Image 1 (cartoon, rainbow, N blue to C red):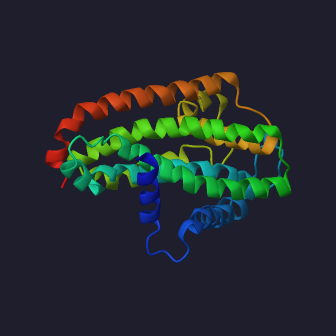
Image 2 (cartoon, rainbow, N blue to C red):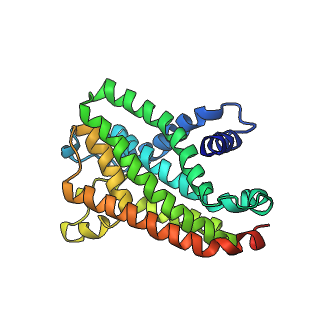
Length: 252
């Protein structure tokens, strides 16, 4: 059922589109061009030497690709219950909790296409090491976190439809509070621990370190990222089950 629904959602996401799944490649490229010109050329931003590259565009791409997976997953998770209200209302005993999971899976499929492009670019510009495989571990932790958060967001959105509108503002703020356009070294050391409370900080840094430097995140960062992901997954599931009995009545 998961596979069938994930394929269905993926097709619906690109229905009527001339380029279809190629948008998974076009989106990060367009963002890269815009933000790269603004921050890399106008503001003359440069990556920290720790990343082993002088290319701001490569540094930026390694941050944008994982960020887009997370932000697109969050934005599409919000309306997944309302969008599939007919399944919830008509199919007695339908497991509504799988709908946010389906959204995450369909976004993983799109993300893998963009990730493949990123790996090819890094391979031809900076070279790859076996540590590149760590990105799949970081992606797994991000997916666990996204499912838990998706359960919370989609559940609340059934009763408060403003959530979908608010998410745009929230993700915009979250974007700039994550070191995508700048290196963490830009933040004063005494405040860096606050930024590290953001789990997506570790997703972005994990991708960059694995792809550009052939290193893993520090052990304490991995433990924190994993702990936050699984705690969010558990609490999100509990929260979703509390709201589930009223979904059929409010979904319309």
